[in-house]
Image 1: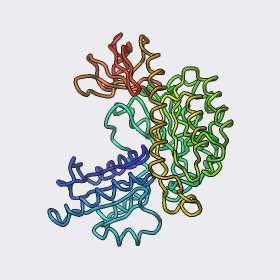
Image 2 (image 1 turned 120 degrees about the horizontal axis):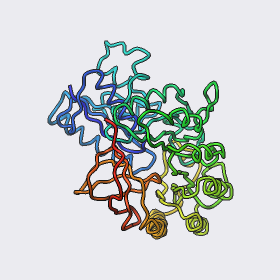
Image 3 (image 1 turned 30 degrees about the horizontal axis):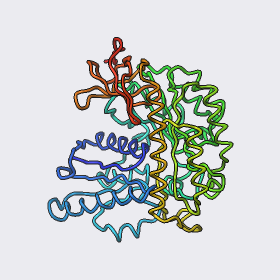
Length: 430
């Protein structure tokens, strides 16, 4: 029996797909690179943006054609944030789908495959994804309690639930024993980690607990919620040598009125205090952010405040999206989507143009420096990997995935760096 998983969306979805794949492998399934050759096709969906939902619906249309015309025995499972607590409407729209599974409900899929099997309470806690390279995502907290007005995630992934420290340690040890050298600790609001656990460990405690895992060289974490970013956590980043100098802190808007309508829970001034804290305690850290343009009621002046903030902070990277209403959210129920689509796109392109210039300048400042790069693979005849500050670097030479190498930066663009090997590699283990 063979399976194929199609994944759309965030790093958490990627991690969920990897965990499901590990469970299927334990049941004897083999991975198929193509749905045409699979007995089971899983669609892991995202609905944070309309475009992501549209891509999932389009792919489901292809699977329907495949099932009706070529492989009537194909079983189709849909998981991820498209699937809410009520699926009657989805079943009507997509009657060819065999099973619907909410985020993290892997058992719903496995029960469809092996209904007679008792997987037992330890099946999933002891099922770890097989790494596909020297880096891996490790979910540490699921769900979100913030309920921003534009966001569907709390309604799909539920309230915040932290994994015990010992569970995370076991997974990291497993991954590193199979060649992983860098882990990224994941959560929709990762700094909220531990508030629901008996001893209330925080993210800093968790990073310290995995820090000395044999084979582990780097630790990252995603995604930060500004209000949860404490001085204690930032100090841990500064103190723990394996924690990378990289922060992703979504701001979403540079205007206080828009932030209030979004119910983000902080002001621009409070956000800037977090940026100042990072730059004071972790000099040279890279900081990236997320921005939504065209949110309900956003005026030209309010949008200009976002541009002003980006120019002031000078982020290393900005992920920008045009607002799209998500059914079921507070904004969808109570606010008018009153910014025209063409205006949303104009604002999106303005953010992209501003950020392109900033990123180019920041990257050009690295030309002539030597950076530590973790080799991830080869593409187009060159090796590639990332610096501790998460800059993508391409360079010629000989090294294996998982090697740590010193690279002298020779050229820079807004999106990546080019360089040459400057010293011997620290070899990957195994």
